[in-house]
Image (tube, rainbow, N blue to C red; front, side, top):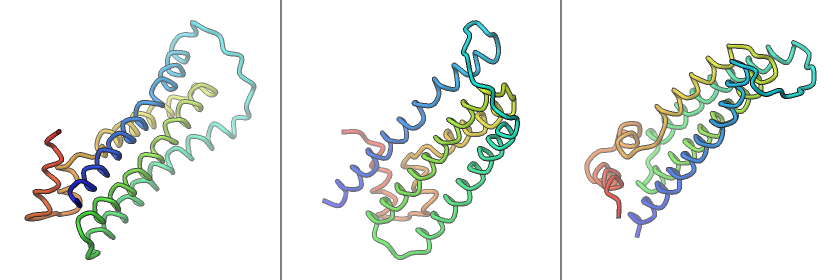
Length: 163
């Protein structure tokens, strides 16, 4: 029964992460295309320049916070004496929080690029995509991050097999 719960936790996590990755990309694409060539006109209100620096600083700050927050959560899981289902559940919670923060960063980058045409938002978005890619949960990544061995490792690696 516990193996089935682990599989459900993982499948739910994987689905939610893919949704959080996919949703903001079209928004950024529209903002980026608009910044490159003004093929369509969007009447945006004039925003004080303060918000340009604030938005970019907020996006970068969220990237830094997400990284350290996730690392601290992984350390807590590694140092705790939890059963496998609890470890995977705590990992899923930490990963979802990580991806919600990355999701927020992508929306900040898209909005900032649309309003201010600041290339810093494009760079921040690229770094966010890198974190999306490096952080996407896989059974191998779970084993490595949680430092699983023996039977626990085998149970998590079984998640690779669909069906």
